[in-house]
Image (cartoon, rainbow, N blue to C red):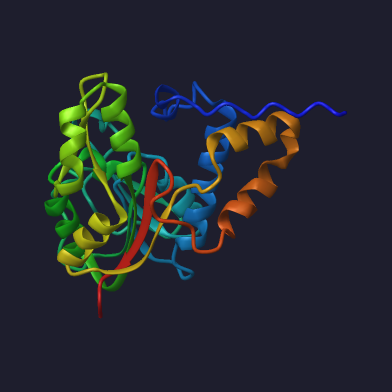
Length: 259
């Protein structure tokens, strides 16, 4: 009788919260490859003016696709290269010193698209105000791509830290704030809460989906056995039919400002 292969162990919450990739290295390589492919699919087909508030991971990819990109940099980390907002030539990135939560340096309807990736809206605890600003600076017909922590991740972190009273309040809570071991606090969303957040800002939701449907343990197992399978796994992820919105540690959404 052939031996039954061991079922890959599920990752710990500690490894899943390590978005730097030091843990579950194969899964995070896959994760960022999926994120890059999702961004490429989402970006406007024609050269456009794009605002990136994601903290530096997406601006170069948008510029490489032929868009003029304003990349918001926190005033405390902007460096000497940052300069005031202006219209950038196509295919370039212009660093902008400003608060990504207010966008007061931009006029109404100033950009064609906004990228709020890399969980930036989960770190802005007053997310409603930030999303309202994103809606304001979008032109009619403009779109936003955003990524937030899921309620699945938030509840797992609360359980890991034995915050049972907080967990019992989650089903009725309108806002779920999650304390992390490093002292930071982020905001988690269910798919329903995320749709409501965008609708309240006057945006029409195009879709909400988990960043990845394939589990970290599955990805780790496949890539350990076949390191060349990354591209195939990414295609499988991108073509997953109508994934369950409740899956995954992060939710990805696209919304449009009505014309």
